[in-house]
Each structure stands twice: as C-alpha cells, then as structure tokens.
Image (cartoon, rainbow, N blue to C red; front, side, top):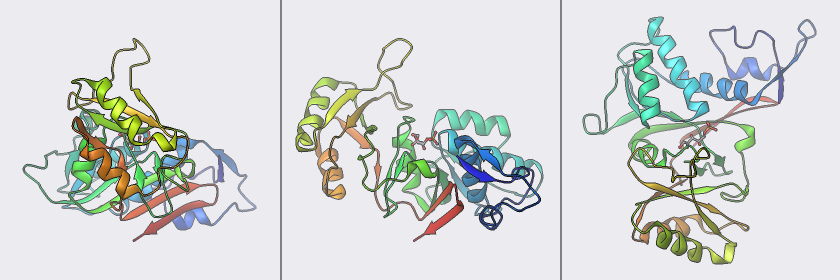
Length: 266
Ligand SMILES: O=C(CO)[C@H](O)[C@H](O)COP(=O)(O)O
C-alpha cells in the first residue's frame, strides 16, 4: 500500500519525480493497491523505450502493464518501428492483440532492451523469476539484451534470494521428474530444501511450461549461500533445463513503493 495522488494515472508522463513529490495540501492522498504500484513501475520502465528498438516483452502481471503501455504508445504514434520479442505464449497473445510487431531471437539475436517483472530482487539486483512459469524463455531473451529493466513493487525486495519462503523454480524435463526433484532436494539439504512439482490448482496435473517441461519449486528454510555455486550445481544436474535465478543480468531495477518510484542502475 502507498500514498499518492488521485490523478496519478491520468498523466501521460508518469515520472519518478512526480511520485517522489509526496502529497500536496490541496489533494487528498489515496491508497494505491499492489497492482497500481506494479503499473507505476511498468510505466516508468517504458520511458526507457525508444523508437526503432528491439524489445524483450516480459511475462507476469507487472510486465503486462508495460506491454499494454507500449501498445498504447504505438497506437498514439509516440513510438514507431518497435519489434517485440515475447517471453511467453501469453505475452505473445497480448502483444498480438495490441498490434505490436513481433519477432524472435533467431531473427533478432540482439535485443536492445527487455522489461520484465521478478519474484525476488536482492540488494545486488540478482533475481528470482519464474513463479509465473516462463523462466526459460525469459532467461534466453534477457541474456540477449543490452539493457534489462526489472519492474517490481517493493514487496519483491529481499535480503537473500530464496529467503522469502516462496518458491525458487527449476525447469526440468518431464522424464523421471521425481528423480530430478530428489536430486535437487539433496543438493540443498543443508538449507532444509523441500522440492515440489508445480501443479495446476484446478486438477492437480503437472504444470507444463511453454516448452513442454515441468517445474520443480524449491522451498528453502535457510538461504543457499553462494548463488553462483548454487546456480552451477543446479545446471550440472542432468534433467535440469534452467533455473529461476537471474544473476548479474539486470541493468536497472525500478521499484514502486510507499515513497514513490526508485530507479537503481548498474
Ligand atoms: O518471472 C516471471 C514469470 O515467469 C514474472 O516476471 C514474475 O513471476 C513476477 O510476476 P508478477 O509481475 O505477476 O508478480
């Protein structure tokens, strides 16, 4: 929850400066929801977008606002010649519905800028991503970016990745998934790791990613220490496709919260 202006979203130019001015005597403060904070971060990120760019289009409820905004600016003629590279089938559908021209990494192996949400952000701008299930395409596209702008509300800020008690996702091939889950659990035994297959809440069937894989969510009681070592160890396991730790990839993090919008860059 945060305090801001009633006309906050009416403005075309939503800037950090506006957000940081604080309440004025003439305008009563209103409470912003988490989704409104996500939208503020997303709109701020879109200010980095310039005509002619190849753009990585993120996935999730925060990134959705950024994609909507890009679509809006294209329709208004304020952006031109954008090529979007969606990080999931869902974002692909959204971008198509907005008329954003699309391509892929095969045709555009260098991406100027990607904008995406995250599940956790540590003080060094390392991320956990993939609670929305799109970590593989996100990592491929965001590793091809010159600039990677991460957009979050402040609830996503953590001291240590994996320390929030929420899932650390690992994408695996479906073949003998229990074996992979056991190996992952064993790997982080000292952190009290519990590995669970992600399932659809409606029918308990395994969640299937856009690439036809499964996701094992790791729940850790203690942080996993050296992130690079943990990343390498996970990737060495046969059956693992990718994990949700995005280490050293973000170039900017935009955080919307009670005190307004903060922009942190490398
Ligand atoms: O990594 C992701 C999807 O794979 C999302 O970016 C992440 O889960 C954050 O989602 P949201 O913006 O809905 O909180």
